[in-house]
Structure formats: C-alpha cells, structure tokens
Length: 451
Image (cartoon, rainbow, N blue to C red; front, top):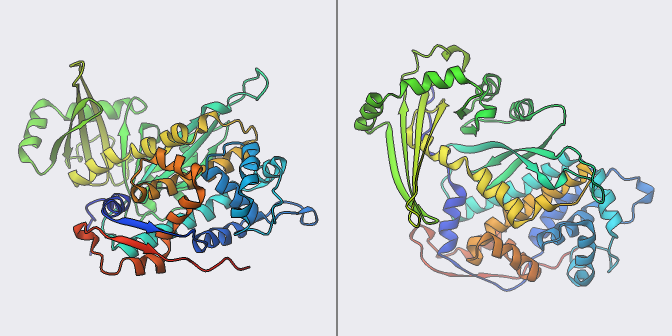
C-alpha cells in the first residue's frame, strides 16, 4: 500500500516562541550542566596539533573561544582580550587557572581544525537542545521537516588584509533547518566549482524521509531533484531563466482563464494579506496537479504540481504599488504546505544570512585563513541559534539578546537551563503551555563542575 503523503509543515521554533512568550523564567544561578554537555562534545573533536606541544586541551580552548564569540568577539585578538577579565568565570569550566591562551594560539587551532568535525558536534548539541525542548514543552512533531538550500558569499573575504590584492571571496552553501532553526550544513564551495554539485553531494548524505527541501532556481536541477527523490524526500524549486523553455511552458499554462478557475475551486488556491514595514502585502498562490501534458515531465522525477505565486505590495507612505510573479515545481500537492515552504524558504536569508552579517558582523570578518574563517563562522551559527532560542525567554529581539550576552555573559548562560531536561521537567510542573498560562519557572542551582 502506498504511504499517505504527509500534509503540513512542522514549526517547532514557532511553537516554542509562542509557549516561551507566555512564561516567565526566574533563573537564579549560572548553570554548568549544559556547559559540561557542550564541553564533552568539543572534547570529541579530533585535535590536529602535535601532542607533545599541546598546552591547552582542545575542548576547553574551543569552549572559551565560543563563550567569547557568544559575547561579541569577532577576531582572535578580541577572543584573547575577552578572556582576560573573565578568568573567574572560565575557571568554572576549564583547568587554565587564569592562564589565557594567546590570540596566536586561537588562530593556529582554528586554522588546523577540520570544519566538518566541528560542525558535527555543534549540530549534535543543537539537535539535542531541540529534542529536549520538544519533549519538555510537548511540541507536536507531526508534519514535514523543512530544509532550505542556499549559498552565502562573505564579502569581507575578497582581499588580503593590509594589501590591495583581491582574492576570491569565500562562498558557503548552507542547508538550513527551518523547522528547528538550525543550520545543519555549512560547506565551502571551491573556487573551481559552484553550488550545484556541492548541494548534490550534501543531499546524498542526508536522510530526507518526511522532509521537504526547497531551493532557488540555481539549484532547480534534474540531478539535484533525483538525489532528493532517491533519499525519499519531497522538493519545491523555483523556475527562472536557467530553464527558459520549461519556464515558458509553465507560464503559458497559467492563463487568466485557468487562474480564475483554480481560484473558484478554492481547494488549490490560497490568498492572505499582511501588514509590515509600512507595506500592505497580498500573497496569492495557485496550484495545479495537471502535469501530464508537460513536454519535460519525464526529465523531472516525481513532479506532481505546478505553482504560481503572486506578491503585490502597497507602500502605505508613498502609495507605490509593486507586483511580482514567480513559478515553482514541486512533488507536494497540498496548497497550504507549498505556500508555507515558499514563504518559509526566505528564512535562510532572513533568519540566517541576514543575522550573520547584521547581528554578528560576519561580512566584516578579517580572518584571512579559509579554514579558520569556516570554523569561526560555525561558532557564530551556534551562537546565533542560542540567541534565537533565548530571545523569547528574555522577551528581547535577537539583536538585543546578542548584546545582552556580551554585557552579562553569566546571566545569559543561565538561559541554557531552559534546555536541561530534568530542570525544565521540574519547572513545568503544573504549567499548561497550550493555554498560555503564565508561570514563574524556578530554575535550581546545578551541581558544581567536577572533572
């Protein structure tokens, strides 16, 4: 029997924000248990240094570098400077006894470290947090997971510091888990290739069951879609000029008469209006399951639907009206799911790329070494994920949450208690987040750090 297609997209982070916004956290003491969990994972990263010359254990060095980045450090010098007045805090988690590594030590370690190994432990830590969050707050796991594939260029990496010499900018392909708010994969794109083969390589290694993968027109490729289907996943991709004949074929199908008939049917039409940033936006979606007539159908595995998306915006200040129309192909046939992921795909830009540059200043990063840059970027993404999780607890924006972490690192670390299973289980006694009942959660002091 054919398995029934799952409808609906899981929105774990959205559910968590709603629950957290209706709870008042009273966290009194800086925890060590969640930090110990992160330290154990950092200790599992392979150390590429010569054993006889190691002064600082890798796990501890990575931990204090992360705490510095969490507080706003964006260079190796600033990491060292941050650590000096924080020796008392760091001694809770390390054996350094006030001996802070130099900026050259941090630079050397980040240049030697394998980014894939660091990424593995960071993703494991964040997924563990999400698992605890789901279990503790009773968040429903039904529906499809949404992954977004998109690339980002680090504009500040296009020159050698102190010279006028231009070098290729670092371009990174990301797979962003929009369901859980986590960047699962950050893969550097080589200078002699592009995103397309890198995306295919990444997706081949992933379990995509009960998952919808979205991508822009660049990655709307037959081979990429074949990989997703082979991995048991669903897909939705944009059509643009890189497939001109296919695009024209889909455009010609959505005549005014057909658009009107789909709208009247209601089951394959969706429209809603939003007000934001001095704009009134109307978003409309038309879906057709009639794909058998497509000349290119056989070339696109599991293609089951065509989507027309129209966005009309009116500026309430100037009165200017703009209209854009986009076309997509998908293996999903549910209009609500398709509309969710079309809109949700922009989260990779708005919730990852924009924050990396605007909130964490990545575009101005002056780290020249390619591998060191990748590892610093991974630490920033870990920090960003924690900022987004802490934001609804603190009732601040993500940017103010980042500033808070810099001004009061000790207090920010208390928020990590919210991702300690036993602590939250005790704190949630008698609380029913489904109805938004307000409650002050008492977070007890964790045990002292013991080696």
